[in-house]
Length: 195
Picture 1: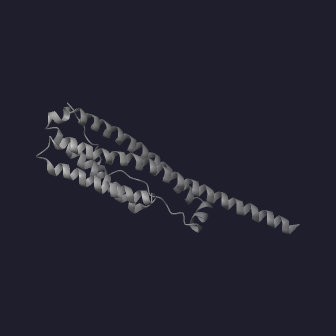
Picture 2: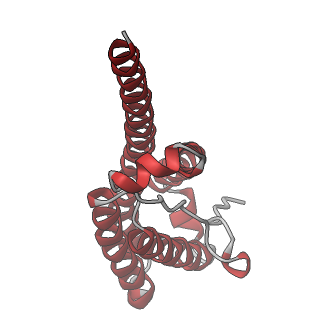
């Protein structure tokens, strides 16, 4: 009889730790899914940029450096996005993506500032549509980033509380890194003005 009680207690302990493991896997998959939403929105943003540059190119013949800076920043951001997609919890990939995305935002800000001097470009139907799509995508990126950070917070909390922390360390559940915005001095959304 005592052997049966010990066996039942052992089975309960095993099921308890299996439950913890499964909750950690679910939380980790949750933040990976949340990053997939960021990936979709940032890819949309980065795909809009070449169209924006091509539309502006005809008008901004003397602003070649500005256009090239936008494309260079976009390509750097695409590389950062691919690195983050490969490992959504990686601190290094998050830092690379955050820095590259800040570069895109800065380059777009300079492009929109230059566009202010070209009324025909600002009035172009293509430019207006692209600017509206870009603004809409910026909002989607912000919401997706918040959802990702919420999922990372939930996962990190789950892996750090006791006894989950024991299971997390035994099975290699690493802490995930949140996506932070650019530093405060660089936090300016792209300016779009058609006045």
